[in-house]
Length: 129
Image 1 (spheres, one colour):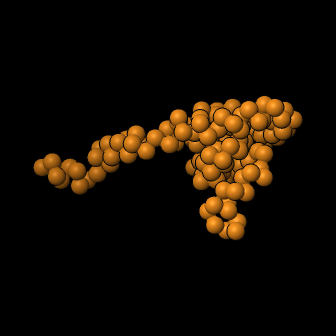
Image 2 (cartoon, helix red, strand yellow; image 1 turned 120 degrees about the vertical axis):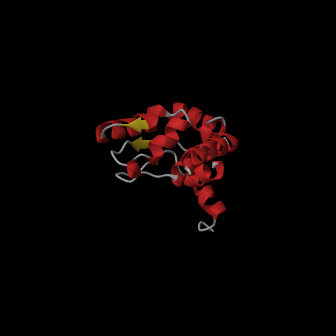
Image 3 (spheres, one colour; image 1 turned 180 degrees about the vertical axis):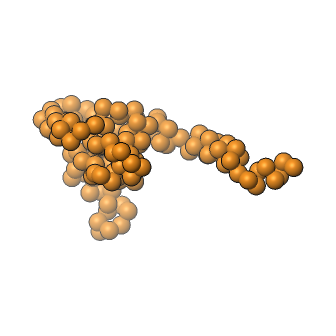
């Protein structure tokens, strides 16, 4: 069924290009799309909620899929949809690119996150006394 995690991911086989919603961008759906080989076109927002996909796309080294204006968003979608060989090549590379990116580097994330917590934690200062 489509309501299971496997069913949701299986539906990505029917998607050619994901159009990131705005003004609130996707987060998990952007990562799922990239993992399943579906490129995401995002319009960079001016607030936290409009920047999730841009962050994920940047980390996956897909800066060219982040647009600054609605016109650029539409132009990129039309351009990508009109070049099926390029779209197919891109789709074949997305998962490998994601695996090689910081998005899938759990140990790096854990190390950096722990370092930040230790720098800002009031508990850490108390333990050092």
